[in-house]
Image (cartoon, rainbow, N blue to C red; front, side, top):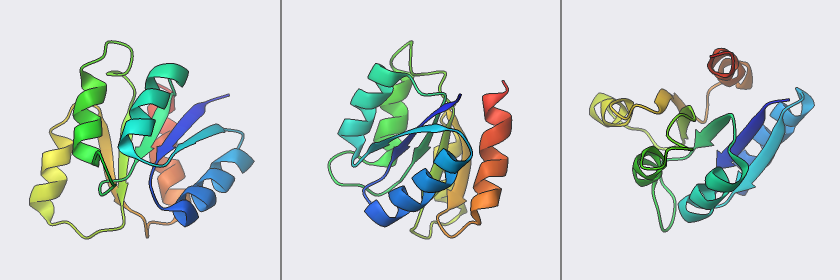
Length: 123
């Protein structure tokens, strides 16, 4: 069973995505901010992380970079999912981070998110 960590301060989004992936058989852990997410990532060592960009305390780019500094978390694939519009330059900034595998909008269909998650777990 795959372990997923969702790092997002939006409770409604957390609930929706957590229920969806739990129904698919994933074990889902939640973190309400970047600091909590980093702690949980080091503790539970998820197979994949879904990460918000704009959060209080520690934003998405800082979380990505911090994950890369630890030998045990640097290999965890991260899908950045944001509710905020960003231009191509912002998307490319995140994609330059080696652990960022996808950059998606929170408005993306859940089946699309699932389609991006599945191949990352087979690697």
